[in-house]
Length: 82
Image (cartoon, rainbow, N blue to C red):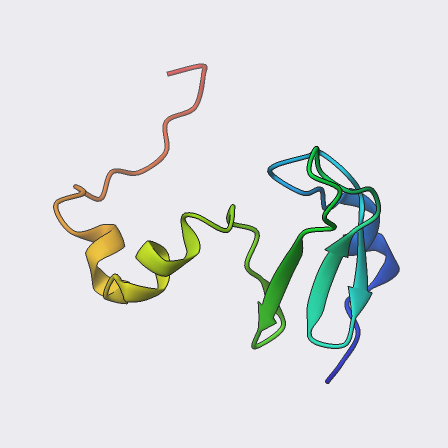
């Protein structure tokens, strides 16, 4: 499994604690523990860190991938000068 680049790791933060993250195998682990003393872990799938709070991960993995774009009109980005 390839390691994430040091540049990417330097900007990634735990969404729960705001702590920095270290890569351990196929997971990212928080540098500091949460209020219960636990270091949170986040999976890396296909080189993409899944930085969802643990309680949201089951719902996100159960949703079909096309569901995230359903009903969204595709609009071109507008520039501030327009």
